[in-house]
Length: 184
Image 1 (cartoon, one colour):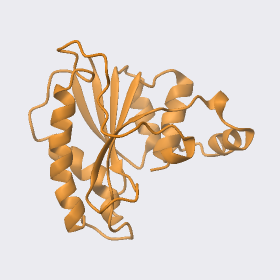
Image 2 (cartoon, rainbow, N blue to C red; image 1 turned 120 degrees about the horizontal axis):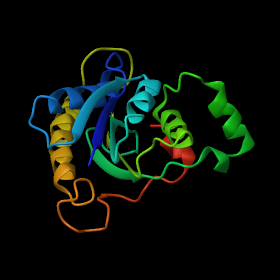
Image 3 (cartoon, rainbow, N blue to C red; image 1 turned 90 degrees about the vertical axis):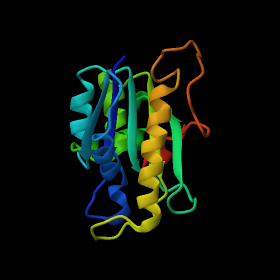
């Protein structure tokens, strides 16, 4: 079982650096065999290139504005649509951006190329501040610690690392199914 954990975001925009800081900390702790951690940053195309190596699961770690209290950590199973299922306008917008820096477009591209793993999770944190600046807010800094703990739980959950026989995927909330909601 190969699992990719990708930290996304921009650490020059305050809490948008949540994903980057989380994977940096995660890289300092022992990980189960088959788990690879990368810092994708704002380079969604780099994520797609990494997925070409073949993975069974993907965990994206990123700031995610879901309207909660700053520092709240969410674990969501994602449902990435097929490009053919998008409206004509959405397909045109998708093909207009060749850098695929937004995670949603990177995931759509990975799906279109056939390299998206069957299970994709978002480990997100509600940001407090996303303007220019270095360093996380206090609430999101605490969220990083919680996120590393949540990743540890994900690694031991049956659907991510199948050491047991539970067919149900791990998910704290309902899956994201609206393509517009993938713009995190």
